[in-house]
Length: 180
Image (cartoon, rainbow, N blue to C red; front, top):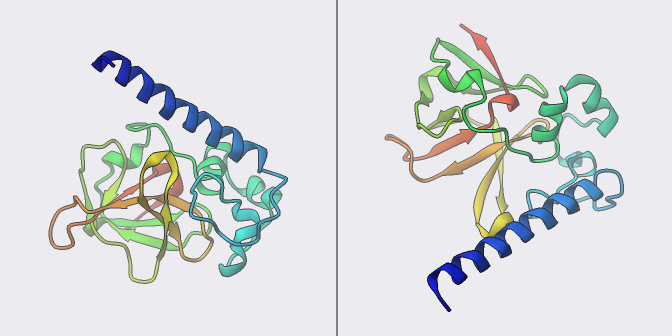
């Protein structure tokens, strides 16, 4: 097998997996009966899984208060396009709250430019987030959720700056900036 054949086969497998998971997440939007969160970030239906969170809403209630893009990211575990959020370059003093429930999540003192195209922080406000293991797309990542409403915020990686060494890579559409 040539290097080109190997690369084409790998791309086909990854693309097929991504399309299957996208199809699966869309087909479970209104038909999921699972009442507990799963490890697969895309397959989780937070409409049913939020029983462990303080703020619980039906899918229709979330759709009434969120924009379509916020709903896709916060409730369906989507990802916004990199470099599309104005919050990526926001460096004013203030707090970054959950766009779903307004809980304070990060402060501007912990924000840094990761050059990834998403707002990044090295530390959340204590107790503000919850995490789960995300094994979608042939990777194992730590998914970050709002601890109050369960909204999907992004992922955390171990390649951040000191003092924590962590990079909380957040979807800007999941956040609301409140100036100090």
